[in-house]
Length: 528
Image (cartoon, rainbow, N blue to C red):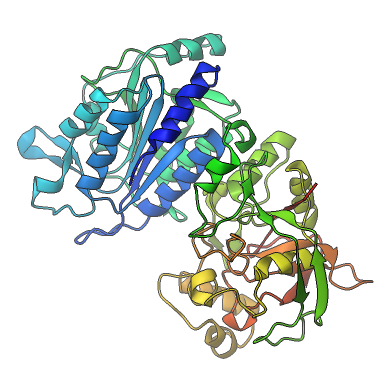
């Protein structure tokens, strides 16, 4: 893990031209402890990192299952490289502990920590020392762990916002004064792992608070009240927000600034520095914050694939593409929330399968957006500067140059019934033998096996740098399934579908008003 000095130098140059001070985030999620494994921290960390990066312009470093050395080395590199006017958010999700023999001193547990050996634990003294020496003007630690509130024992914050206060003046004052704050998921108490779909209760509330606040510029205390009420109403834990004692706090506060990718000042070259798992692809940002990949001009034979079979596939036909841009991933919940906010549009009902909620209150920003009908998807794409792809464009992009039915081994490229749960299953057996091809019965079996939707971009991309063209959700296209029909064509494979349907040429159809938890979309933009 290395923090780019070139990137930080670029931010300093930007400050000279009046840009907002840069924001950085170190996001840590530890699941796989040897003695006490957890379920949600890595998922929480991935969603938080994505939200901070895509919607608030943070330069994020994500550590999964981090050891003590990983965490302390990252903090040391920030100490050496952060610009003096910058802001750093440190998000930690994992085990926490207090030591009753040392006046209940608080600790974080790196993934290699041993319960009865403090040698690898990270103490509150370690954290305070690191925070005190960071050159950043503002530091916010968000700690989702047991006993995290013990880091700020005995410290009380001053109220920054009073009724009738001039927000702009208050925010400017808070920016001018240094801050060192802790946002803890609870006080000196255990906190819940899970409890909100695939997130901890605190992480789900934190993500939702950042997404839903009406202001584009806001201080952390402006989301604290609603978040505290949300978490306290669903659990026995009560979040806390306080200055960190003996850390250099001077009455300021951490101020968030919501941006779109088009406003980030990030060049295409910098976007290309975030590679698609070894794929070299030109990308561009858009108002949604999602990247579009350049699909090159070319010729392909589309329809029935070599190595595939199915009565729904188009007959082989020739397609000549002038090239276009396509979303690198399926449209995410976070991107759709930005569209809904900009257009004053209500969100659809939360997705459910056999009574199981998939994404409570749309809290997971990095999951594909589902429950949108064809018109919703069309309107979103228009807002983002594009449109839904034609069937030919979708299949041409999905193939990535291959003539085969798949663009890689299915397990490596797609989330589908067999691999979307905690343990592998045989989806075809589940559908034909156990459910007797009865859909409602099949859905209950999916839920019983823990099969569910997944964050975008986790599987391998195709040769064009596109993720999840097969798997996770099927996707709307702009055209009709049949020339004289009313149904719209959809393409791809969904998280609950069986592997025998997996091929880039397979087609399906839905009436335009369909909303379901397996159906999403992505957009294209014409070359000109």
